[in-house]
Length: 119
Image 1 (cartoon, rainbow, N blue to C red):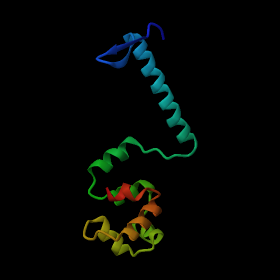
Image 2: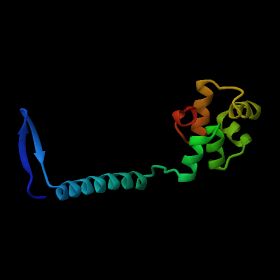
Image 3: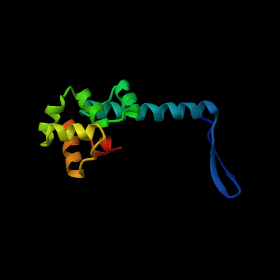
Image 4: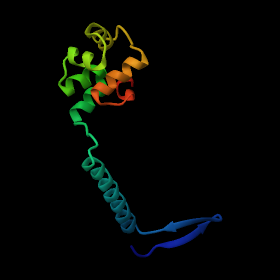
């Protein structure tokens, strides 16, 4: 970077730089952010495929969407969450809301955050 100037306007300090220097700076920031994301992924952070994200934005049951994504049956998820299959079905179909405790157990069984299914 070159040609950076410090200026003052109405008593406030500013930095003036060329558009080329600005673009270079943005590219460096993007690179740093991308490296941080890749490090989180390398450390095991889960990523979501685009199709799942789109489905989550339009679904009437985030629990069902995550359950299907995880390849679990209603019975498997119910057992993992320690609830009955009919109760889980009622929650998935919007007939019951489920207590916070139950939703936490469902989220844990799906390996997602509570906010991911309650949002």
